[in-house]
Image (cartoon, rainbow, N blue to C red; front, side, top):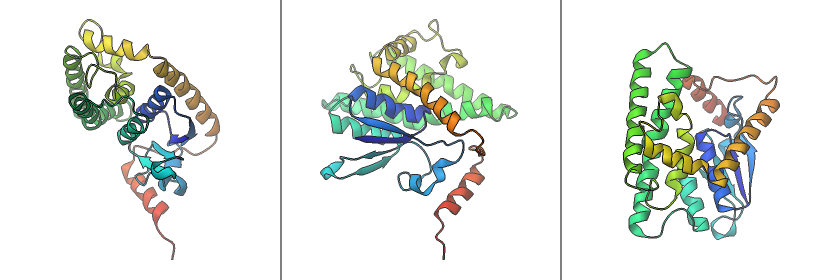
Length: 241
């Protein structure tokens, strides 16, 4: 059994898709980052970086429970546990890992910053231009790659595709369409045709609705205030004399 302690953000959805693809038994344990549940002591034991997602594999290495944080590390773990979506062939394997790390190093951070300055900090035009332009450049990298390969990592569907898809759901906001990015759109459509991805998208809506109801009347924190986040972590982890 895999316990997924998470919210249905792009990073949370990566793991949801992987779990649905593999068919392994799992359950979602809601962690509402809007109300600060990521700073609760029980969550910090799973993810000391006060982020989501984290997993607990009740049947981990050696047969005992094992805990992991970092979404793409979790994907590699689940791929090796189930023998799926990380090719054994060396060239395909390393190709998959390259594009998995491309998502970690570029797609996630840059798309995330663009979203922040487009939605929460719109008055900073320099930052908006910087991250929007870089996001478009990254879509072009994906477009070029998918013009030469059926899937991102190699000619097989893999954890590189699973990791990247949730971050690309907002492509229309960037003006990414079939005319200018036909290879990307071919891949994106193929992703959304997968039953596991469709189940993820349905569950994402259901989980968000459930969490909104559970959070009713609870005070909301400012997730984007990094100083406040640092202070919350200090308070949560400081030992009392």
